Image 1 (tube, rainbow, N blue to C red):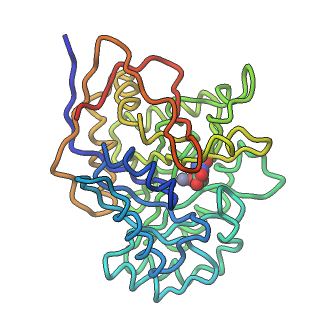
Image 2: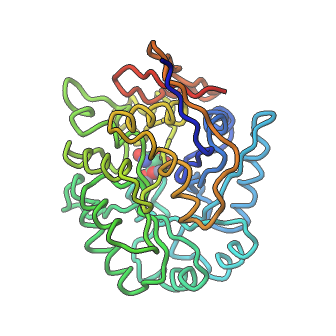
Length: 347
Ligand SMILES: NC(=O)N[C@@H](CC(=O)O)C(=O)O
Ligand SMILES: [Zn+2]
Ligand SMILES: [Zn+2]
């Protein structure tokens, strides 16, 4: 018997679309399945002002495939020079849905990010006042802190003190990768949410390193031990409303992934929904996929859920996905889960 599942159309609460030729090539991969996405601002140069965000939004809309119905939800890249008044105006006009905190040096194009949280307190206070969420790349960059511990140390040394000081600030812990992250999010009350990526539900650090280095599994925060992956699976499939999908689909051309100093990021836009159906079915939680992918995110962002749907079908035979997306700047490898996937989104 063919199994199928119809969900409210999902949204992606953490997405990298890039710009120019890359944007044109990857945007259809997202708009095919998702109605909205929180668009990450780590372009070169970054999206730091309302004017930048408005212009970037226009470039995204201009790149939409014919007939696509998709709403880019824009964000601002927080810097130590960000003007609270610019942020408040961008929020009031409806243009901007979140501000993104990158600790300087933590990840791709984060060098313009924040070195000292004290210097951005006026912006954060304004955001707390107006209810504008702060999305966090939650890793410290201290050289002495091991890369596998950087998320847990961020929670203790940056996030928790910040939330104690500004409890009204609404925060999204982006792409959590640890049991500590999941536990902190579920204890955080209504002003705290956490996104979980598809790939962190599938790979642990062995997938990156055992049997040869696999650059296409390298992303930040880096995948952790198996017990953390299992904690993320429980968080994503458990039905708790603080957890929602943010794919962190992050395209880099193969030449920069398969490199002596390879870029961080997994490109999952193409097959995320099929992979999630596989994961949720494996955990006996298919009925909770809609909450994770389509309901909890809008509720956190105080937006209505979508009124259109997406249908997934489980086929007898494994379904093929493109291995790469071709772009004018080079091929981008699609995340390969390493197991056969029978689920497929039906158009
Ligand atoms: N996740 C990643 O590994 N990379 C992201 C940046 C980010 O989300 O940290 C990117 O922009 O490439
Ligand atoms: Zn990040
Ligand atoms: Zn990201």
